[in-house]
Image (cartoon, rainbow, N blue to C red; front, side, top):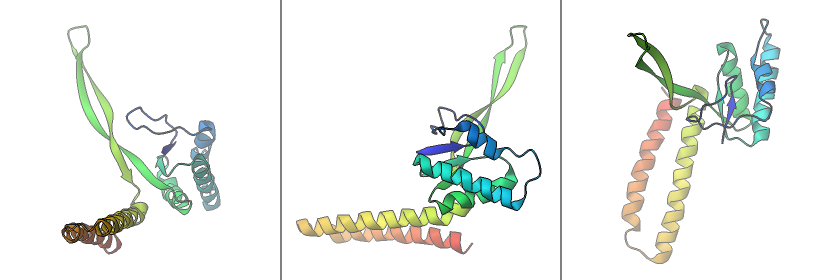
Length: 173
């Protein structure tokens, strides 16, 4: 489940879950005065706890740029992956009824982008998941006495090496 920690209601294409108390999320995201570091940290922690209580594993975030970094870190501290919505702008033209053409911009949801701070953990989790699946398959294969185990293991290990290289590129850009 992806919980929506933005001030806007999620679109059907995004498929996000709205928090039980959307007004609390909006209040925590709204800054009427220049905030202190302490206030930023407290609000980020409060939003992270709200997301954790919802049972979400991922949170769509957005808002004041100065707040996103602290919010990303607070979410990660409670085991939630922060993501940003990505949309494509499409130009739509339609007759305006007066002989002219009305041109509007429509934003279409195209996916989610993980926060930069979560990339390493996300990729590492992916590698660990694949390793666990490969290990389970290898054990089952050998228990059945199938001869193709070694070839499939070789292919899986090549995939895991590629994933490991991806992790290293993130850690050592």
